[in-house]
Length: 281
Image 1 (cartoon, rainbow, N blue to C red):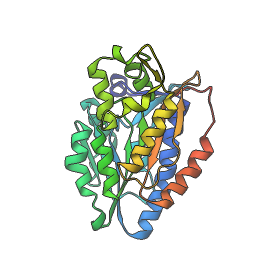
Image 2: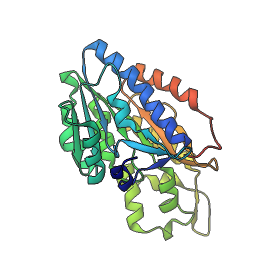
Image 3: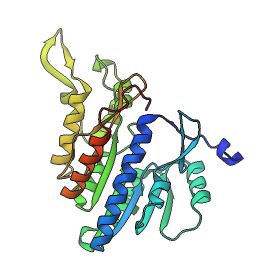
Image 4: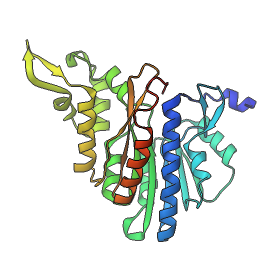
């Protein structure tokens, strides 16, 4: 690492996060091949791009993040949009990538930038398509972004469903103890307050307390929202990402309007499913 790298706080990642990078890279290669063959303009979008690299917890070495993996894909994407809220990370991206007309580095809230600046460039009727990575660190994503991508019929997404943040801050055994601010974060991510009825069952209600459902039930309901409300036709079973104790810290979803993309991702997910339960996230 150089001095600038040491001053930037890189995210440390474990086994499953490295798997996620590999999955997105493998799919990106196939996606770019297919879209290039169809002669559609295809874009890559990373809404939480980071500084370009991560640190592998196992080796303490820098590894390529998803933006730099995308830049290396051949045939190349027509355009690449990289977004991050932190100035230090967007600054490093500019240093690492340099001045390229096909790469757009945007600093700010991805919820606003995606809806107002980036997604309008991906028009189904203009034969433009996009692969969008939505990998927030927690509940930092607005459902409107997800829904807009789905209803565009032109955008495929990889999405982090942040189980750890949800369990830690919102889905407590006693929902009455959860702060309104934390509950509102999940409502924004989910799109409405129907998560309450999903997460807490009235069956077996005792002394006024509702039964908390397993997180798997909540995740399945979210997948149904991707299909039924956001309008993604194909949403394969998400891949659980785990920590060193085997606990699920998030689910990696893929959602697409295309059967071919669905088939490819099911194959890639199948290669990694149930691997490395004892490895860190």
